[in-house]
Length: 467
Image (cartoon, rainbow, N blue to C red; front, top):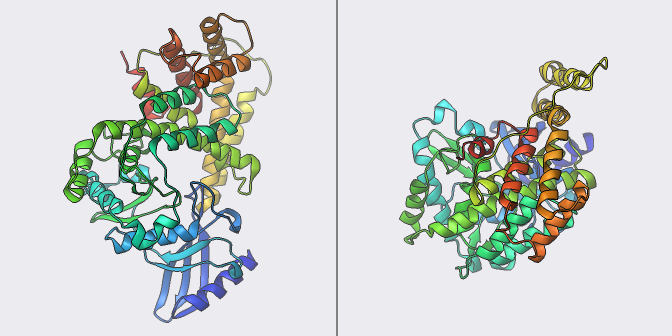
């Protein structure tokens, strides 16, 4: 850490006018893909706070498909700021000789960016009903940015809806894990991909949690790391994806607004009507994409370099998105598997060991820590809850899944073999989406998995409410 502080101080002394001393560099708890730091400095004007966004582990990362790199992210923020989009000022983009990896230093802005807080914080009570409209206005400004004039046309990938589906699906296939609901959604998206679009700048992660708000409105649009050139309706569908409603399933736009207000704000700036069917396609795609993105976090944990407890925990959130796909595409009656009765005479029992460690993390470690260690202790406790629920429900859930697959295929293979049989059949078309019994099996399977992974997720209540 001493080398980090020394190298950072050297950069600040060279690039920030009036800089005198680095007081503190604190890594914040948010940001599973990139690191975010709060930099407190002493300057000629007094104490001052800056922000730094950096690649995980401070490494140098070459741009790859779908991830143009942090230098381009800084350019995107600068271009958006010039177009009237609320953005922090970017002061400096890190270079190879700085020794800090990829990243940039920018203005620190105050506001609320935690999605769960945005939908509940009393300070936003008055402005909250207008946020969906304001987000629509901002998205229209983003989509109007001149790609050629900014040079972004030379730095960003172009993705059609069909190509984006295939690219995302291929990423999942490389994980070599059979997740039938993901493949079902992929098949539906392939069959329903809209044709024809006006290539525009797409933020690609514009959602509650990546937008900073205050009682006055929108403070900043954050996290441009996966922007591309494509169908602008992707952004409107993404902010409506259930993962980003933070429990307010009744308010589809970020958990704070309606479709109508979002579309009205967009149309007031763009002058173009919103294609509702296309937004629905991208809402389904949003759950499909994030289901795979969550699995990607688990893959990152396996391969590094940022092997924190947060990544596999996010991996388990894939079932949340899969149940959202089921609710959108194949709604119907469903129930949660029940744990079989039985007594465990071991002393101590497995569940007692798990509970003791979980409670230690939540009651002792969290009480003695703050910042990111406190956040990670909470995540670790949540992961132990998943293990506890799997201990209680997992065997019954897997037995029900196996019975469903054996009935679907009239075979007695083991669970993993039958999962792969279904996945491969969906991919090659030998198992059509309307195969009798398929929808019912998928709904039941993803609901049981979600009851283990996150029973409080709003998508589970939506699924159970289906008549």
